[in-house]
Length: 169
Image 1 (cartoon, one colour):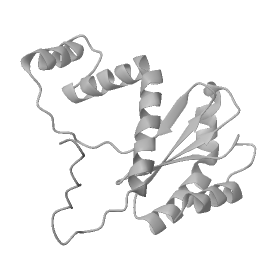
Image 2 (cartoon, rainbow, N blue to C red):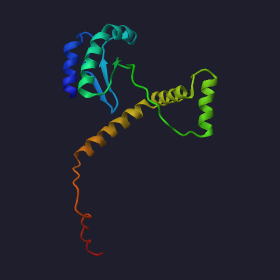
Image 3 (spheres, rainbow, N blue to C red):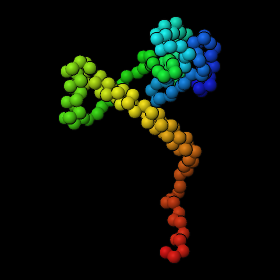
Image 4 (tube, one colour):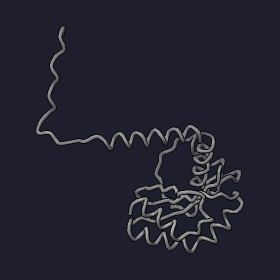
């Protein structure tokens, strides 16, 4: 199912007064996230979430049938984005003593209840602090993906040819 088909489903099945433009569709290997832009204050997101739940779940089931991955939702106001029930997955990492002590400190003072939630807190804090830089980095990565997609690799029967030597070598 292509993004334009998903946009059509959303336009057909969600009330127009909920949406303030086209949804943003983020595709990942294990999840598809749909962000609905809204023209309402941040405080109204919980109410809109509840009011649109049934329609969003119907749309999600149809997309999941076609795409084979779970669908998560979110809403975005001018300055804030709220995601609803996205997947969480374990991430294995090796941390040195100093990093483990930091996580344990966050647990000890009550900022987090586990090392895992402490690490998630740190990631969110970094993302917030560096949001402008990260937005720029995302654009750059997107551009790299676009350029890579243009590269047409074809298998060769042997090594690539050696360019002729430049004059004066």
